[in-house]
Length: 428
Image 1 (cartoon, rainbow, N blue to C red):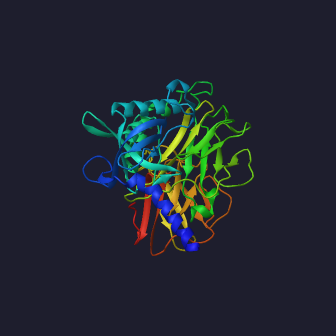
Image 2 (cartoon, rainbow, N blue to C red):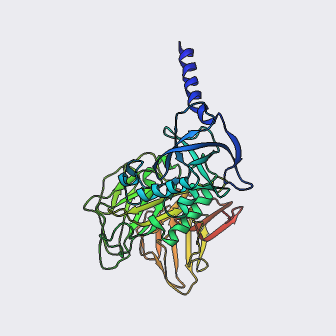
Image 3 (cartoon, rainbow, N blue to C red):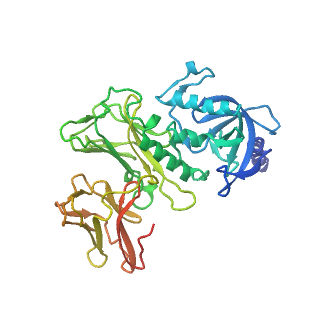
């Protein structure tokens, strides 16, 4: 009986996959010469659900049933009312606009599509995960690429369907710089002080195994205004997937101050809030063909995207502190790292982290190093911080005497300074 049940389950799983793969052939994932190879299907769109989901009658699958398809690499804002008639659609700010733009792209291709996947079994829940292309004026065009480039969708990285990761992250960076559509901080309204400055950084890599320390991942919201507090009640933070944290009504960032949202559980304070998730949620960067990364996004109650950080930086990544800060390290005895400002202007280290994989140290706001000064960071220390002396409680030595490196990195992974010794190297 156990073997019979197992056989039936395997047959059911095969039946779920076969209709989507029966007529597949192969082709370039990115619709250009070279790169990854994908399985390719064709079909006809029967319904546009929202800005990242469509229903398709797949050619040659032996059934008239339509298949739900989740478009690879993109995350449109959430729609709450789905309808064929545009006037009946409802959802978050930008959601209906994304659906309309997707429908327009599909209509230009007469709703005939190519579906592409590196892995035919890729799913998002019950939906097939596929890149979608339409043929316009004799050329196949990637609709996900257009949605990200025009700012109708966030970049949604995928480790399984990774062929699009690098291109889409670059396009998202360009759309953000140009403030296109959802990157426009006043698109949805002006009730929440769109001119008020706000900054966001995400610590996406906890020390050691991220899943063992969810609170090692956090989002920091800073208020650069030296006079006015920033009320955060009803504002919300999200990652590139669907997870979001809504700030309580009492949340506020003091002038020149900051608050943090820790991913895991804990007791909230006026400056520290807890998302209550397990395991960790922010994807780590991979420096390989998968080109993984992620992002954190802060929205006001009207739905305007007010601050964000997509990582790794792949567009306009120069930093004014590069060349002005120099690192040196003492790996033997009592370990320490020194950061010297050889430039002409004072530099606040708050936007940067010291990293020596898999460990990292974050600077608090106001960690200013004037020209000619040196900030010393003592490892294995829990002593009180001083203006130019900081403590990094590593609870043991972390620097390899025979060869290692320490980097000063922005949170989006741009290396500003590095020092290496022995067999260590600063590349990567």
